[in-house]
Image 1 (cartoon, rainbow, N blue to C red):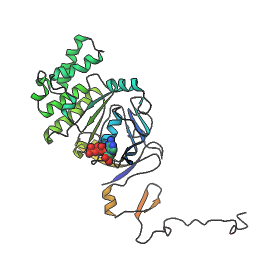
Image 2 (spheres, rainbow, N blue to C red; image 1 turned 90 degrees about the vertical axis):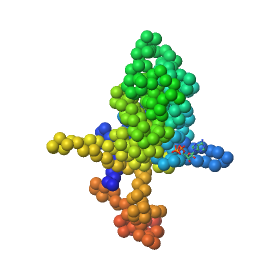
Image 3 (cartoon, rainbow, N blue to C red; image 1 turned 60 degrees about the horizontal axis):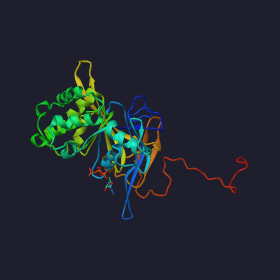
Image 4 (cartoon, rainbow, N blue to C red; image 1 turned 180 degrees about the vertical axis):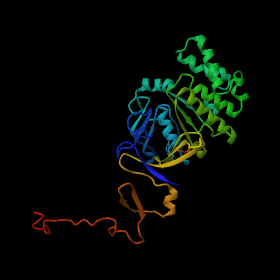
Amino acid sequence: MSTTIELTDGGAPAAAGTPGTPGGGEIRCADLVRIFATDGVEVQALQGLTLTVEPGEIVAVVGASGSGKSTLLTILSGLDTPTGGSAVVAGTDLLTMGHTERVRYQRSTVGFVWQQTSRNLLPYLTASENVRLPLELAGTLPRRERARRVEALLELLEVGHVAGRRPGEMSGGEQQRTAIAVAVANNPRVLLADEPTGELDEATSVEVLEALRGVNRETGVTTLIVTHDPTVSEHVARTVQIRDGRTSTETLRRTEVDEHGAERHVAEEFAVVDRVGRLQLPQEFVHALDLRDRVRLALEPDHVGVWPAAPGQTAEPSPLVEPVETRTAENRTEEDR
Ligand SMILES: Nc1ncnc2c1ncn2[C@@H]1O[C@H](COP(=O)(O)OP(=O)(O)OP(=O)(O)O)[C@@H](O)[C@H]1O
């Protein structure tokens, strides 16, 4: 794997348009910290997470169990407040918003799709009624246009055939696609999906991920999918990996067309550097060179080299580092003075 370092806010300037660059960003998290304290024990679920999602982008956040994915999504959905750092979504500052703003944010700025289908749809309403409900609660669309919008959304999600069925009479995939229609009914600026395929088989998961991609493409809603399923990266252009409460790597996918017109899919993995220069080396790199405790670094004109410290080389200066002589009042020379 070739790994490239991508600099986010601060650090050396990144190329214009590079994901994670300062400036715009429909979702902007910087140095996000969430500490849970239970029975006197502190758990740092997020340890300075930095993430930027541009307007209209679809991004997957993946990570092992306990890496902080749900904590991040709960904060972005306005259900929890971070301990520190900053989080701004569609212009709303999630650390300082008051109660009224929080209600408005949850009702109209963000839409959610949760893992449990039972949390997304009311079991005693049909698919149509479930999609119509948020439109009626918002009351922004004239009554006669609501039916048209419900129909259009169910068609967009390819669940028009279950319009009159209750969730118990639909497949898991149909329920999740209806849930996406409910989530975007009021045209939110941001769509958040928490393990939307967690209860589905592989083939149905692909359908639901493609449905999220289709909605993102058709409506332009900025979409963040949080999942432990690494295959999600095949359905989105950018996948962000979280490790120990921090973004560690990003995979960018793009399609290239060669001189013969043949398409080629390219995936490139980047390590993320935060504002103070921290980066996490991919675990396979760490294991391959048995990197531990400390490493030697060298700054070259166009890259940084990382070497394992030689065995037993603990307190001695590295041969790559020029020795620095300490001048004291006693050993200062005439020239120094
Ligand atoms: N309310 C809480 N109180 C105490 N610790 C918590 C709380 N919520 C999460 N944690 C801890 O924070 C860390 C991150 O948890 P989180 O649920 O965000 O991880 P996750 O990546 O979503 O995991 P999973 O894929 O298993 O859901 C874990 O160590 C977890 O035990």
